[in-house]
Length: 117
Image (cartoon, rainbow, N blue to C red; front, side):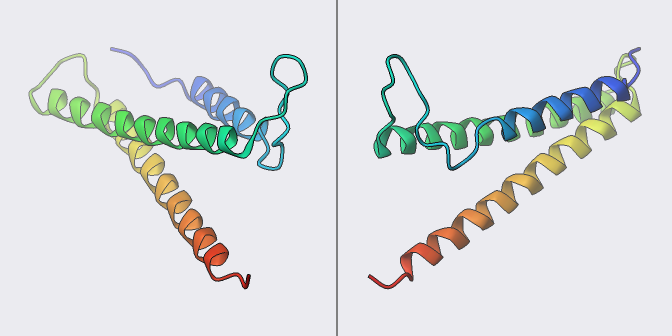
């Protein structure tokens, strides 16, 4: 039976936070190759890809949580309640974060749409 390694969990969270901060939103002139600046379409494609990957990651967390719950309910001796609960919380937090991001994107979209021309 494996134990929950809180130190490792904290390191993973810090690593994800560092990755999120390493690509600021206003850095649209990312250098690729020989000083080529990204166009608006390339930036939009990159953002769409990032958003899709984020949704897939949230989905994966939820599927992992559901699988762990089913295994625990079936009486799998390798599955501890603490692990199942931790995964359920991770899935819940990732879903809540994605919901908040969606809300901010909708709010930003409405602000841009309502801007005077």
